[in-house]
Length: 138
Picture 1 (cartoon, rainbow, N blue to C red):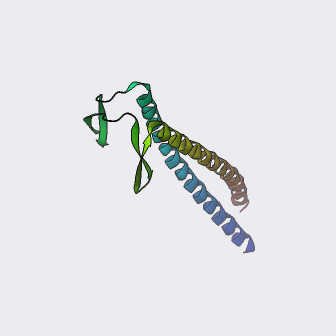
Picture 2: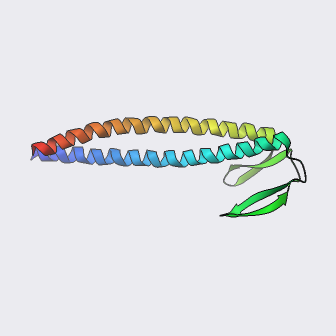
Picture 3: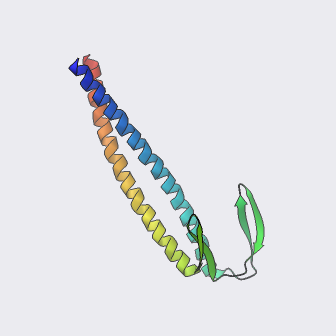
């Protein structure tokens, strides 16, 4: 009887660790997608420094697969969302520096999540082996 309780506890712990691993994996995927967006934005800002001129025509995505044509009025300043409700004007250089800091933060978060996922994977593998051995003994 006590053996069954111990097995159930270990099985519940395995499930809990699996949920934790899945949660970290989900966070990793969200941050990784955000990092891709940051790189794209930074490349776009870099191109502003390299030769986009006022009155050049560009395409602006407006959602989904749709874009509109627009003319650049200011190549020196951009509007940057610093949180969900706040947009501030920065020079292109300041915006690139801001994005570089966000990229560094994202990379740090990704490294932490990779380490957690790896540690959980190791624990899950060990527990899985142990649970399988116990199931084979019953």
